[in-house]
Amino acid sequence: MNWYSLTSHLWYPSLDKAIILGVIYFVPICRLISYPITIKNRFFRKLNKCFGLWEELISPLRISIGTLFLIGCAIWNITIYSEIRNPIFPITSLICLALISLTYLNYRWKMTAYLNLADFAEHFPSMHPQEFFDHLLSSQGVIRNGFPKAPRKYIELDKIDFSNRARGGRVKIRKLLIGLWSSIKLSRMACIVFKHLGKDVLSE
Image (cartoon, rainbow, N blue to C red; front, side, top):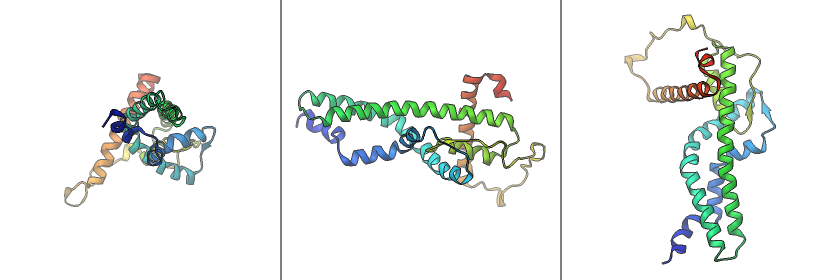
């Protein structure tokens, strides 16, 4: 069995691989197509939030394993084309390079969305956390998230009470995981704001 037979199972162009890549890159592709559009409608924001949640789950896989797969696929297909003159191979290589570029563009779009959200939160520090995270997920959806003139919900920071506990003092795993995710996202946003806008904006 030669090297072509061994590697063709992984990188040879096929419909099943195209479908898998389509699912993984669905959000960035839609974001590219709908780039001029910005949504502010609450209903579409909720729908966009669902896609943002999917993006949140799949993006680490896309950036790491997905990018390595595409690099290998691009190199393999252009190498095979030098031996087998089939136009499907260079076309596949170009598609792989385009998806790699789209991964970078999507990353930049996310950074911009984080900064826009930070600016919105700076003007409304008492915005309800749920609304903040709704905007955060919606900002990662298939269409750019637009911010309203003001938040719909607020909290009174001086009246927050953490004394109430669940029965028996138990903490649900779901709430624990959500809290962990929220802390990670806030820490990441803080690093981005500090890097791009400075510590003065971060402190506010």
